[in-house]
Length: 113
Image 1 (tube, rainbow, N blue to C red):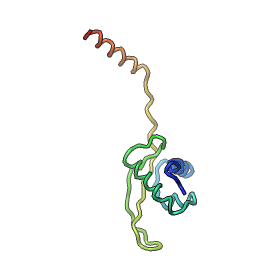
Image 2 (cartoon, rainbow, N blue to C red):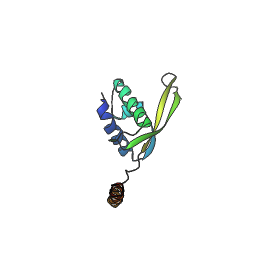
Image 3 (cartoon, one colour):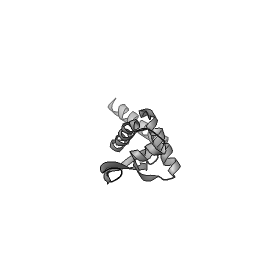
Image 4 (cartoon, rainbow, N blue to C red):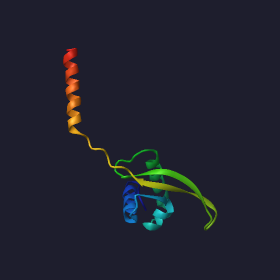
């Protein structure tokens, strides 16, 4: 069974092994790929929903869109599919810009002095 803390690692591994930076994924597809039981489905879908609403900093992926799709097999039902995309890398902080800001802040303190 996939615990909540394992889902980000499983998603990252799934995306890396697929070799794609963007693809549609279903909970069932992840369950079959990692040979997980049906009790892991709420943890997987909950995590995918979470990274749809906001970033999860330890996971380099996010969900761009969620669509409901009607599936006919084995019986007719509606499942969600998630468009998982690799997040852009974090911007590097420029230390020179930070120094300039610190100098400006210090000069304003001296003027108010």
